[in-house]
Image 1 (cartoon, rainbow, N blue to C red):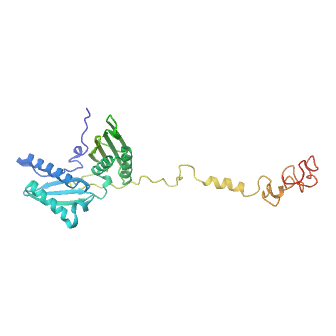
Image 2 (image 1 turned 90 degrees about the horizontal axis):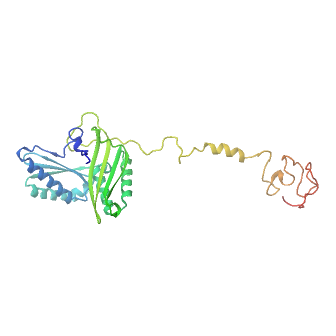
Image 3 (image 1 turned 90 degrees about the vertical axis):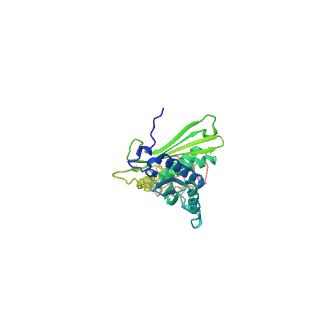
Length: 310
């Protein structure tokens, strides 16, 4: 038995507000069921609108529904037509006055619900689960999250036996109440069965008193991860200050006594062209190719092999 607390339920009233904000009184159960109906209906109605959460607030005669979405244009429609339609449909469903507000999510990569649904859609499109998880983790960390954990469970890759796989990066302190952890579950309906996707995203820690009203989300400053430390070599090797000083002086001239190595005497060149080469030890004769036997060289006379290049 894994006794795990839901990361959001665990933080309610501490750093997290409720998604339904009203006083129930004697009709608490009816209102709760109505909330569930509204959420189910809206999720199905605008399933391509990137809806993260739906916040419901009630007064005596009015229900205020705030839709948090990454694509407000799809929800609003041309000239607000779509919103008006949804408002009329919700009036019929609840038999009460309904007001709809749209709240745009600026950074969808840091919203657990949208990240989980993104992975689920990729799995439905038959993309490899490992690839989907890793690319998602990379893009979330790039946006400045402190940590992310992604878990998929089910018949991964169409395997006969279901299993669970998870990847994580950064830190996800689940036991720290002040850690702002967003959690979500999504399901991918694949041809070989359902695959569950769970996502935990840590956005930093909250110090001091936080406003728990549901439409206020905490923002975390991006920590510049991923950059190379200053002065580090490009490919993890040494810097290239060594190469110049070492190779330069050797190639640029006098090489242990040999002056200019390329010259009129053909390959082998320079003052080496005939005689054993200018200042070469043992050499010194003026012309080695056909001359009278190379100065101080022992064994004088013409060398066997006759005239010509060396």
